[in-house]
Amino acid sequence: MTTIASPASPYVPTRGRLARVLARNGAGYLFLLPWFIGFLGLTAGPALASLYLSFTDFDLLTSPRWIGAANYVRIATADPRFIASMQVTFVYVLLSVPLKLAFALLVAMALNRGMKGLPWYRAIFYLPSLLGTSVAIAVLWRQLFAGNGLVNSFLANFGIEGPSWISNPNYSLYTLVVLSVWQFGSPMIIFLAGLRQIPQDMYEAASLDGASKWRQFWKITLPLLTPVVFFNAVVQTIEAFKAFTPAFIISGGTGGPINSTLFYTLYLYQEAFGFFRMGYASALAWILLVIVALFTAFSFLTARYWVHYDD
Amino acid sequence: MTDIAVTDDVRPNETVGLEKRRAWVSVLLHVLLIGASILMLYPLLWMLSASFRPEEEIFSATSLIPSSVSLEAYPRGWFGLRVDFGTFFWNSFVISILSVIGNVLACSLAAFAFARLKFWGRNFWFAIMLGTLMLPYHVTLIPQYVLFLNLGWVGTMLPLVVPKFLAADAFFIFLMVQFFRGIPRELDEAAMMDGCSAWRIYWRIMLPLSLPVLATAAIFTFIWTWDDFFGPLIYLTDMRTYTVQLGLRSFVDSTGLSDWSGLFAMSMLSLVPVFFFFLFFQRLLIEGIATTGIKR
Image (cartoon, rainbow over all chains, first blue to last red; front, side, top):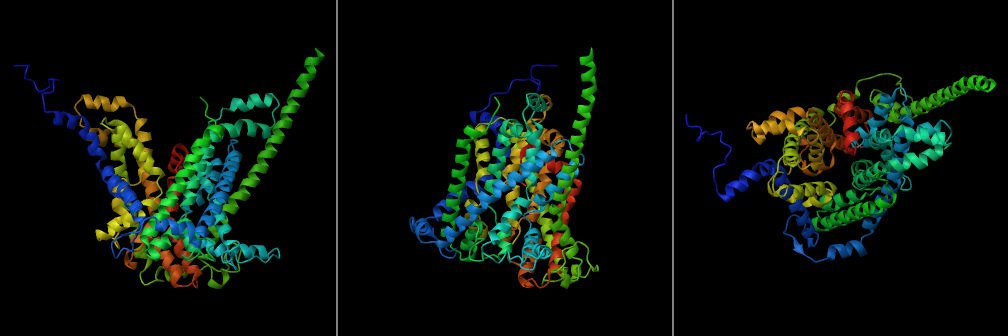
């Protein structure tokens, strides 16, 4: 009956330094191991490798040949398709993101009045954004905006002869903007959640003071919602920069007609997996990274001037 | 006295007027919203009806009701390529299910470490993990391709599935960390006192208490993997390994858009699994978006 040697004794026997460090940290790193391997092998390692590749000429068959900044010089000075893809991507981002967010906010505000049937409306408006990136929807869009597609059949009822939207370089990009705006569902749900957070008594106090609905929107709703607007804007912009599938399907992978749907990601794909210019495509990828990083930094820096945090 | 009587008379009228106006606004709003709903759903419903239509009607009809219903387009589309769509659906299904398992396992392991375990450098790695969320995939694309090429994995589903088992979708780690932090600490502290190992706490306490977030992660992983086009486009080379999305692409290319109803029929079928999740797990999806800001 010696209780001293009981194994339940709280005293940890003296162990080596390494053993103690392991005991304290081991479990954490073990649980983190899969992520760790992935982070090193699939994210950090490849990101650095692609930075290196961007300074090389590399076609997958022969080993990369160092050519200094030649890829970047060519992109900046002698690549009309780069310029075209930049223009297309920026027009797409600058049009589709604000329009999508405006629709999302408008519908969210209409739904936030304690409407009957809210779950139904919310579900219907959300469905396109859930289905949105699949090939089936791009296929559908290709038909809708074809010369003899649904949109033109509809317009014909009013005696209007619509152009062939998809194959006309003046319009093709805008059909993709419409496709993006059609998917306003998920920012709408985030706006709805944000609107719920605004205390009702603020509106009551404001209307007692005689503030019109319009004024209430600009003075209460919008300022209090700016954190959500900010979040949605950043997420949707990054997503818009990455858009690929609809442009690929609608243009048959070419980015045509006349480069009018040559999204940046599509151009990068063509360079990498069409022409196997892996070094050049890596340089394109790093330029995209810098653009997205600059954009994000810009949003966060300007946020303090227009995003309202109540603290 | 008379003053009071007057106000008593006026008040009810005013509220009745206000209520009437409210009712009108509400009716108007419903009309607008129903109109918008129809506009939103029209393309989808039209595609559904087009898949049942005679081919020559597709490019003239704007209505939703076909003049005659025929199921012909479905078998024609299904066997329209060298490899039938059954194979594509099976491939998509296998890749999506494996991705779900990988994502849920690997992300919850990492999330448990970040949310509950103490170890040196935890905050540092957490910040790094959040940083990877911002990284556009383009930057890792080419070296990853070279890596998988050297491993001999290009042409198989491994490049699409293995990264999921390494928690490459860091977004879900973040999602789960948020949820784990909401579970009362007393539970695992008590278990720790009783001598439970970290693994048992993870497996027996955290996971069973986290079913909503695990389900949300599983459903979004399934839908995103199912819809993924870019990954399969790059890594799958043999038609027998194609996913549904690639199958649809080949259909567009090979029939040269001559068989629209077959294409629409297969397109509709490709949306069925996503639509299924939408119907039965809508609340989970919507709550997931509302609380964490999932992008789509």
